[in-house]
Length: 238
Image 1: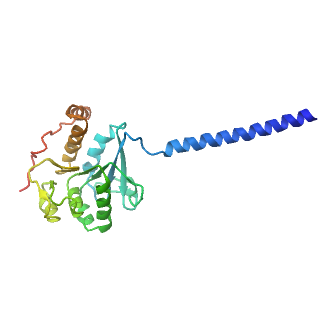
Image 2: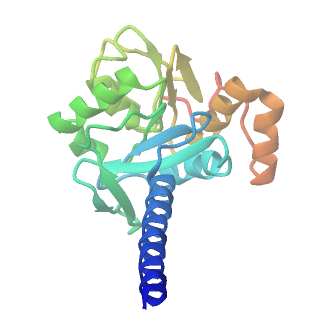
Image 3: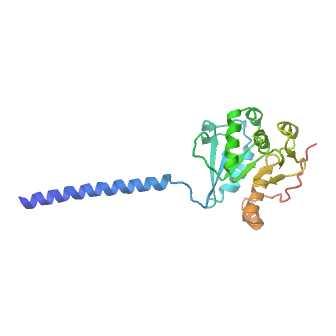
């Protein structure tokens, strides 16, 4: 009788220990999944809005996205959820108003939506906040108009889409706008000309960070004819 009782209690205790071990492993697994990115990986936070330009986003995303051991892409919008553009390309985004967003790289695309968003005080304020804390800020096309509205480009050199150059420059006359450059670097700010120029700028960024041969290898992998000369664009603003 005593032996049976001992065996039952032993089994019961063993069962409790097993459950505790399972819970501990489950908790550890959850912590691994939800743990922050590795210190060596830089987050590229893409600011999304309705009416974004497709290649402004997915051109640089293709380049940074290939380097999964060094860069992590995240897509944000003010309210989160699905954001679409005039091409009908939807993308799922995280809520930008989260307090714990601290990306190393901020990427601001352009597109027809910028004509509306330049007057979106909340978005401009958030861009300004994130730009101040990010290590680098990259804009593509008319995305430079959004950055210019923050005042952070005042007294700095920048460029934008050459077809929309007059509109972009009208958003802030305190910026030293370059009519000729493919992309411009001023400190931590990288601004590119229109649409496809964002890919050239992204590769230029990689060249600055990792060396030109590294960037050329990435360009070759995606079979892209990289325009390496940042100071001369085939599309010059009138």
